[in-house]
Image (cartoon, rainbow, N blue to C red):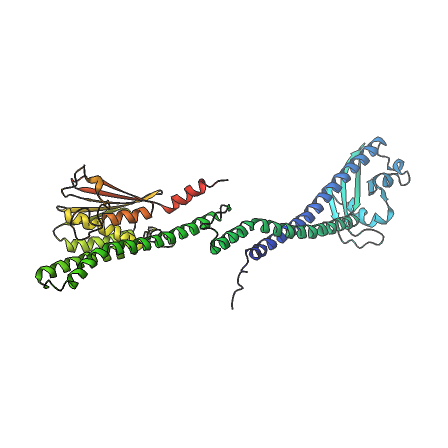
Length: 458
């Protein structure tokens, strides 16, 4: 058995969800209207009957209990428009007379208040009545008074009113459908502007999506623009890498070519070493540019496990430097994720830990810290440290990256490049153990999203 699929249209899905709710609420309101109408009508009739019984009691007391003196034709019936019955000793008065089979049994009962009679089946009398009975004494003579209302006629009037209410409800449902359709159409207008912006982007008329969108669409627009920025950065990095590589290898290749084309000089050991040096330079430049091309930068949906990667790197470096201790300090869980591409995080941790391992005396400590605003990577060692006057030069590109030279400068330019792509910051500080402390701070994407929404105009 296959379940029905949701419609592909947002408008269709909203109509399917909202229309049954609206119709259900309208039907519930109609049902509640019927119940309340019946309850209010009964309370109103009962209140009137009680007032008329009080009036009859007053008239009987004024006549000193002489019921016969109240027989003035159809006076009470014309005044009250209700049937009534009066019993005093052996005297009984019922008006109109066809109601006598319904009201006389009520005169013989005890108790006071409202009494209902349903499905009586008396010829000439209504089947459903509501009566109000009261007993009192006048000069020691017990008197019972009953006033009754034909509920069948009232119920017919209520049914007619309820039917009109149903007709109005159907009209309101049609208006509700039109209102929902109009509201959905107006709510989806930003989607049309977003589609138009995407068409302009595809046609090359614009390079970014610049539309005023509702709060729900702002993360989508921001992520699309970030994707476009990432693609532009990658294209720019590729072009820069090709330009750098072309510029860097041109001189070594020209020198090797000159040596090979110079037939007057024998290819002795010194020339071989010179050619090998040139080839090593070319290999270094190729490796550096290839590593830099692998850096992804911020990408939607990409994440890494910082604790797992840190432990793997610490284990490997512990085998590479067996005489030194590598420690991890963090409160993050093993399965916790960071929104950083795995290769980028591996380059940051690997370069920083390798530098610290080379220059430390006995111990290297890695700390992973996360708050709502940022993520931090702190690497400190107990080595000789870096002088204050040159600590600010760490990671600068005065020279192209040379990853075979030992020291704290190894790979730091790569770290700085990756961190900048995540809009982060890298600081070099004197360590608490006397060595160097490198503190990498990367802002959290959740915090950036909240800040962007707060700063959005309008």
